Amino acid sequence: MRTYDTVVVGGGPAGATAACDLASQGLEVLLLDKAGRIKPCGGAIPPRLLREFEVPESLLCTKVNNARMVSPKHREVNMPINGWVGMVNRETFDEWLRVRAERHGADRATGQFQRVERDENGAAILVYEEKDGTEQRVRARTVIGADGALSAVARDCVPDAGRPHYVFAYHEIVRAPAAGTGANYQGHSCDVVYDGHYSPDFYAWVFPHGDTASIGTGSAHKGFSLRQSVGELRDALGLSGAETIRREGAPLPLRPLEKWDNGRDVLLAGDAAGCVAPASGEGIYYAMAGGRFAADAVAATLATGQASHLAESRQRFMKAHGQVFMVLRFMQSFWYKNDWRRERFVAICRDQDVQQLTWDAYMNKELVRGKPTAHAKIFFKNLAYLTGLAAA
Image 1 (tube, rainbow, N blue to C red):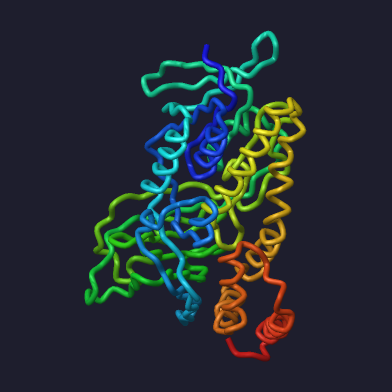
Image 2: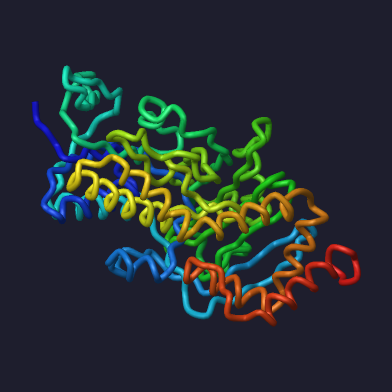
């Protein structure tokens, strides 16, 4: 039976990043991915991701320089970006990350994780099933579970991780309309629709991907029809006749789990750990950051034999991004509650101070503290809109 220093379950941005980092250190790594699954995702990434994770611009299918916010009363607010935000197709992007991990020395296997067994010495034996139903076993000194929001690794190995909080997302990839077709579509702008008709507790979106576009929505309400909502949004935008290339749906976890490791040899990362930003649903950057933290924690555990290092992954992630997640969670619970508040939220987005701080925080992945005057102005403007002293 082959023994690996680490078996990474899941080949998305978190798992592929962790596998690449560990293999680059000369460790024996197996990257296990079930293949054929594309996560529903708007595909937005900030320039910081390209720099921090050495990702080439050639993977971008387009760059956007504006976000168009749409209110329940169909009022539109443009938020120009000082620079650009990149858009990627997950099918191409994720595979590039997996190939890079392999190029740095990781082995790749295709299969479905089944369970972790223990040998007579307590060592982990990871069992996975190949496409033909054949079970395979490998011995793993450590395991990283990066197998998505409904993580089988989490259920099997970290039962006390905490209860995940989901928004269910659904999108349709369509052929982008040509200019002059009459469709209300902008190939350089991301549309974010805050309207309870299309999502009672989240938002709907139209994100350009060059020759294609992602049209989607999300909601935690189980009785809400995501597919019907997207169909009606396409009708409203004049995109009902656009060719549909594929349809995808999946849950998005919007709160980091309380525990990411089993205190022994298993660690969670990415969506499996709940690392998707509330309010925005952004996950690619946070998945890759979590994957890197997981790789560092596993490397320290393997080097010292001390499993306590596994907990450092969550500690470092929350120190770096916990405050941003807390603010975004408050924003979602407050501003997305009903259409009256959504209307005022979009109105606030007209403010240049709000726009500047929003893009600064998005691009830098941290709260901007250097502008106390702007923060004070935004606070009083919030009060004005909420009390009706300012018109929406």
